[in-house]
Structures are given as structure tokens and as C-alpha cells.
Image (cartoon, rainbow, N blue to C red; front, side):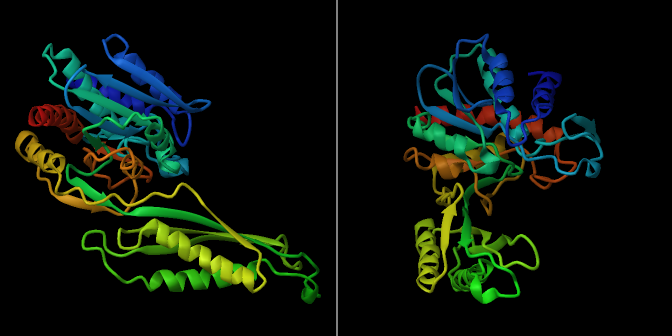
Length: 380
């Protein structure tokens, strides 16, 4: 594909404000690129204005999945941006704008590779299925829906285009976001003995949870240690009243040595113990995700690294990630290898003045096409 056309696809995607919503606009644009070809296009609605998109090219042979999310994070404070976040700007051989790195460059490169394959005039010995998901930045629930409805069940392998700087990310931590709510009794602060302070049990919970999580000292050889942060706490209405409601939130990054189910049980035990002492606490979880098991032994991971080094001419190594991806959902779809491999460096993700190097993006377009051919030929 000509450079100008490939860049237009990326900048068109970046110009769509899909910050935590409105992913259907991305699905509309991608559909317009493929509707002239003999391909299968399915829109899977999550909610109004939020459509996942599934596009399959080819009609026989091994099925390789390409995964990319349609949403981006909020632009934040606009004064921190040197250029408007949703007006893609080319400067110093880079493209600036929200989603440049995370991860519309990966999504666009996959789309360009698929279009190039369709326009090559060659008989394709295999298939590619693009899984473009909603809500990755706020809980991976688009990918969860695609898994539940069977769109990943027949994959032979999956590549997720999150930024990896051409390294092959073969594992990453899981995540547990939790909220603990406390109920008390509001009275005047001059007579606290008549009420029940909702904040105090949360302090006890925070201390117990932090102590327990800090005791988990076993180190995963690749992912390292489990981490825990009390990230928010809120309660009370004014300074001279005993608070009758309060809540806190926490974030835990899990490893296979301390699986999510174990951590749920431990947190819930703390809540139960405090409730037995008179507290009124309850806990809920927000879109928890399990760790991605190590994929370094898979044929797909080894093949991807070989393609990056030999076909694209860039260095590549197996790496681990601290943040979760849609892989945490897709591993529940079947026994197929999953890797994270994207062209962006990932150094400006979620930051103002996010960018991707143009040369890296164009290499990504070639990478996914070369990887598809190698994957098909090695599985026939």
C-alpha cells in the first residue's frame, strides 16, 4: 500500500474521538474500508454507540486473529497538549494525537496488512479475523463479549497489537480493581457515641489488606511480585458530622503465584472478619482480569520474533507486561497461543502529546502481513 494511504488510515482513525465511548464511529470507518471486498463483516453491539467489529478475510485454512481496541483514554487537560489531541499532527517524523501509540497505530497497521493481502491478487492459504473491541481501557468488556459469543473459539492463534516496540510480549499480570463500601450512622460530631463512623472500618480494612498483600513475597520469575495500592478513599458530608457512608478502592496486579481467586477469598475474609466485629462492609470487583500465562514456548511467539528480526530488520525479544490487555479475556476462548506485538514504543501511552514514529507504524503494516504468511505456511 502506498505510504500516503496507510498514513491516512491511521490519521482518520485517530481523528475519531472514541475516548471511553463512541466506538461505533470507529466500526463505521473500518467497515467502509472493507465493504467493497468479499469478506465477512459482523457488528456486535455492546450498547448504544458502542459496536465491536469482527472482519474475516479468506475462506479456508488456518485462522489467525488480529486484536485491537477501538477506544482510547480521555485526552485529559487540553492545555498540556502541544497539538489538539484529536487532530493528528505530523511533526519530526512522528504522528501526534490521542491513540497514536495506544493503540490505533496497531489497529491501523493490522487493517492495512489485511487490505494489502486482499489487494495482492494472491490466493490466501489461510484466514485472518480482525477482532476490534470496545471498552478495553475501562475493563476489557468488549473482548469478553466477543469471547462469550464465540468469535474467538475457532482461532488458531491471536496477535494483539498493543504497543510493544516490536518486542514479543508473552505474559502479563492480571488486575483486580475492587471497591469496599461502609455503612454507618450519622450524628452530630459532638456526640459521636450515638452514631457509627463509616470511615473507621475502612481504615481497618486498608491496614489489614495492605499487610496481607505485602506478605505475598514470592516472586514470579518473569512478572515479579504482586502489587497492591489503595487508590481512592471517600466519606462524610461535612466536618462536624459523623459520616454514615464511606468507600475506598484498591488496585492489585496479580501473578500466577497468587491467582485472582485466592486474592478474592483473602479480601472477602477481611471483610467478613470486620463485619463480625460490628462493621457493615461489602466489596465488589470491577472487571477483574487474570494474568496471561507465559507464551514464550509457543510456535507463534517464536515465529513472530523471527519475522520481526529477519523480515522487518528490527531487534526483538520476549518481554513481560505489568498491565492487563484483552488477552486476559481471549485466553478463556480456547487453547491457542496469544502474543502482544505492536509497532508503537508505548512510552507516551495515556500521556499528553502521545505519538508514534511513522517509520515504526509503516514497519508494523509490513510486519503483520509477513507474519500472516509465515503463520499460514507453518500451519498448513
